[in-house]
Amino acid sequence: MSARLMPAPEYPALDDTEGWRAYVAETDGFVRSMVGDGLAGFDGTIEERVIGACTVYVVTPDRVADDDRRVYLDIHGGAWIVGGGDVCCAMAVMTAGKTGMRVWAVDYRMPPDDPYPAAVDDCLTVYTALLRDHAPETIVVGGGSAGGNLAGALILRAR
Image (cartoon, rainbow, N blue to C red; front, side, top):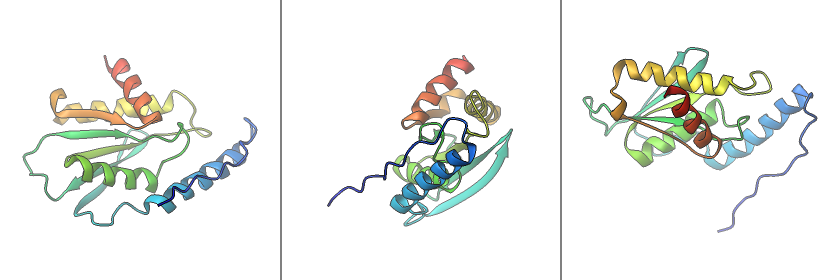
């Protein structure tokens, strides 16, 4: 089996907003071609919520009991600029399948439209919303790559 490598397009100029949007669309398209919609073999529900200024995908595998209070707060990777929307949702479905937990996936705001600190603000808003109904010890905060960085920034800011 050979790995498919993502094409390496030229980065647009920093002030080229449309160029960055095209770069994000191309990169997300490549990821989408690799993972699909994440729903293959998934048994459960996906609920889309708006919390603060961002969308949150609440993914619950069927095997999670109604009284299971654990939640995985999933913060997607993607260099702080890619991995949103349906890609975020697909990755949340995969995380729920791996962890067997309810997943809240933060589709945080990203550049070029929403620069720093929008992503950290969104993560904190969603974490605060989780704390209204969940004890801190029932919340796992994690993410891959840039999402791991945002998870650390979130914990520091929440502290």
